[in-house]
Image (cartoon, rainbow, N blue to C red):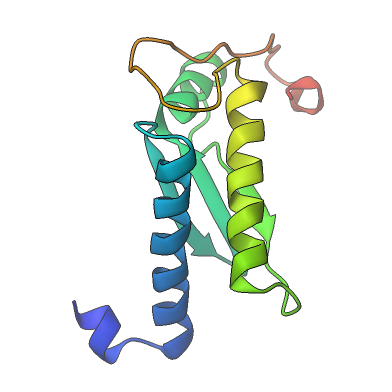
Length: 120
């Protein structure tokens, strides 16, 4: 991959961290469709089924969880935060922590267009 060989050192570091965090999420919550990355100094966690259901209900794309990354966090602390936030995300949308069977679908909280502050 070019990014690993010739990329900005921060980008390479972020990519490697995203891979580690994705592997950790798959270990704790197997078979869930996770997408992990970094953007604007934040770790971005996305569950594709939840994101699709939110899009269907709200008409907005790009639903994800942002975890601010600060210089004081160790990679192990960030990995633990990703696992914790991933579990909270699953529970917030009525999915069980642990392995996903592919059948159970997220339940989206009540949403009224224009009242985003009430959408949790």
